[in-house]
Length: 151
Image 1 (spheres, one colour):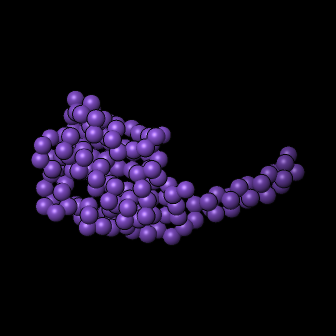
Image 2 (cartoon, rainbow, N blue to C red):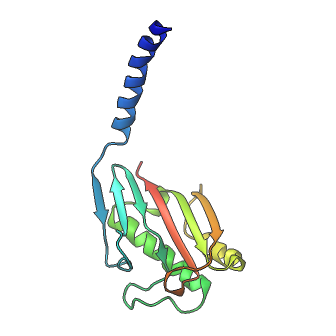
Image 3 (spheres, helix red, strand yellow):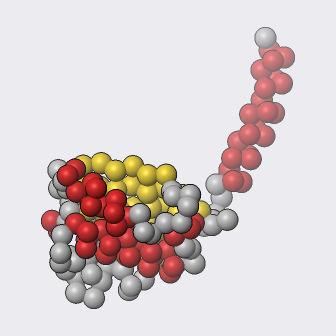
């Protein structure tokens, strides 16, 4: 049994070093005034290597600090525009987005959100999850967060 352990050890060490190389990279905070300032202690986005992690965006207008008037469609459009502005500030585009998470204050807004969302992404659309939640910051009806990977 010992020889197996000794043979496996170099394989495990090789895998660990390969994993650390693929995840290495300095963390860089991304910020733009084309999206609302953070509402709490977080960054608009963090870039590590070729991957960009966006914080959740609600439909706040960055100029006024108020939710976009007009209901869930207007808030969805503003939230997606906020995400797009953050992506662009880091040199990414919507085509680089690989995963989206959507939080809805009312599951009945799912269809209305999808109508707006469908116009934002080229094919193939990113992987996505949408869930209903009890409440969102500032009384928002929708929050969107994304992960993007530069090719």
